[in-house]
Picture (cartoon, rainbow, N blue to C red):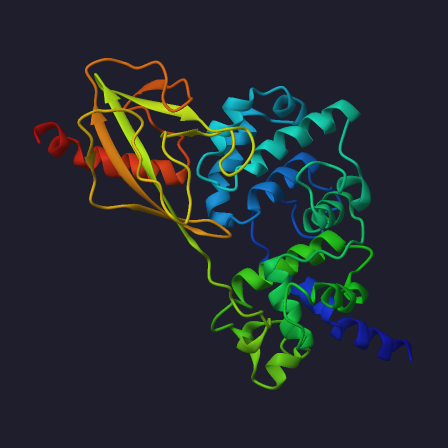
Length: 357
């Protein structure tokens, strides 16, 4: 009987997955090696998880290393200047995360360390259900059920879950919970993440290499790519507006966006509000030239198309549409969010033409 129990344990999805992870885990700078008795630094785990929200591992790597070099622990980050952090975050997108990152760092520093429980972590700014579960499991060995996009896909296929996501996430969590090993919950979560990233991919999953192919209900019926079930995609509205490229003597007028809202607190090109109707207004009379190519950018809930109007002024101006401009050399515009970096690149590419027009 004991031998049969050992065979069953070895054949369980949990043990097969952990054995695969021990051999194939991705080496990531915020992780401890598989099976390590030493838990990773909670600061590293938290920082990486916040950065990884809506962002790929490949994109996060350089940002993570740079943040660690500048702010090696949570106390250092808590003491950082807001503008410095926002500048270093530029390019990662979803800038509310950077504001919450600072708020959470200051809360953690004030309390003397990270909460060690999933419920305690949920109280930190910017830490939702997934992030709290991931930090609790990986950094504190709490048997939390972690569900990110990769894990959703793996588990949906494993159980052939018919519920559309994200509505079916609670049922997915209930199905996964019995598989979470109390001795290695962090490794289990990261193994599912790695399996989804490298084997159980959205398209053309490599099922022959998957350690769970013998347990996977979707694979058994050849319907891997039918899962996860997603609700019908809603069309995103298109909003329009105008950005103003205002230059004087090799310097460009930038403004800082309001602290709340999209791209809050970030440096930006000045411009109109964004609306479905589209605002083509200009801030003052000048020899404006409208660039033919608009800048397009996608946000979660809408698409954006902005025209760029450029003007070269004989003198600086002190106010632009309610903002005090920050005059910045045009060769020192690094750190702009992607949307405004694209607009700047477009304007710079057309500057010779504009100046000679």
